[in-house]
Length: 450
Ligand code: PEP
Ligand code: CO
Image 1 (tube, rainbow, N blue to C red):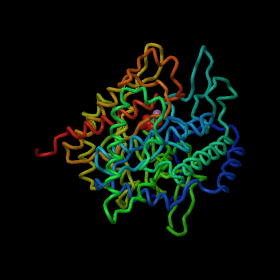
Image 2 (tube, helix red, strand yellow):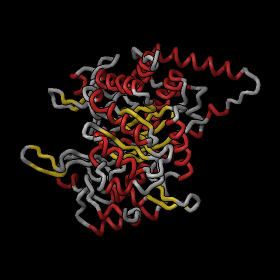
Image 3 (cartoon, rainbow, N blue to C red):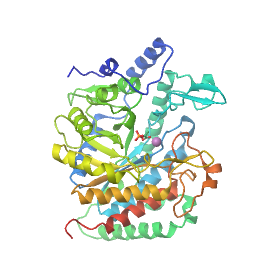
Image 4 (cartoon, protein in one colour):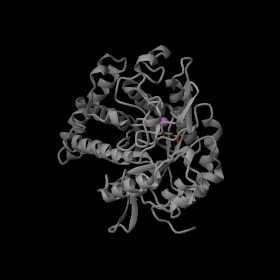
């Protein structure tokens, strides 16, 4: 294999990259980015990797979630707080229900670049480049808005820094203290059919914590500190490379734009640019796998991305769709077992379950999402494997993009409450309900041999 460096992907075919009109403007923006401080540290990344290694051994459960695509316009205190709240609430439910500590990872502070199935979009006979995320171009359908602009990489860097800064302030300031989960309640949940269940659970946890505090010698300061990590799809290679730095203390290269970058389904080709870039960084990496993934391709990917079989390095995020998971997942589980590669399996029940409504909205049905998740737990269990995480597109806001759930979102509700520029997300109540249903489904899965 040829020698790796942060720009060695430039010698390969790279999918899903914007066609910048000025090489000089791209070089200027990349140089400026490369001169700026990183957004996260290798010390945080090592802590995450250690927790992921423990998750591979069944000692932690991973929850990863957030927007399909963040937008610059929605970088506000409320939106960041609401995203943190819903992740904290879901993790509370999962920690309590699964009796396992949870690793929280947001699709946040850098989830600005999107792969698109079509390079161009045509409306009323006019063809323009597709919208590829705020770090590349703008969603408005005009030639100026759709022109990719490398300066947006710097804007994306700044918005990521603002988001991380506020998240850190909330977490370090005690907002995430497990002893006060009432801080995280959002007003509109009071009217939800799930409100009573959630409040009962939160009270039970409060009682358990009060009880623990009465035991002499038990230190509850740990409850005040929670870890929260950031992740995004490492799609826009000039951005990722400019924020890739060499760590002298660790003698390794790290992508310091995020803790956990992932490779999407459309860019996981073995000899192409994204895999080339990802094979050289020491971060843990996610790999999305869908129905086109073969056993041989997957094992080649693992050999390339994790030749040393390092624990905590690889998260396989499967997203087959509820009708296809049963056909595809078992063979891949067996192949990975045979290869002896350590991986953390996670299920993304969103990306294989996208449908279009009669009015043209992209949506997902709550029961399809739940069905894929339930099948994922059952299939892993039946193959003596462990589903160690879940991956959602969701938001803490009161939007209506996915259909169903206890609040009964209908097709006609999508007309007013649809905000996503890309994929449909679970709203706050649907996400909370999903976490509760995960817990009740897991408790019903028979243990092997019983
Ligand atoms: C995504 O996670 O937003 C995405 C595009 O996923 P996938 O690569 O699995 O289609
Ligand atoms: Co998406």
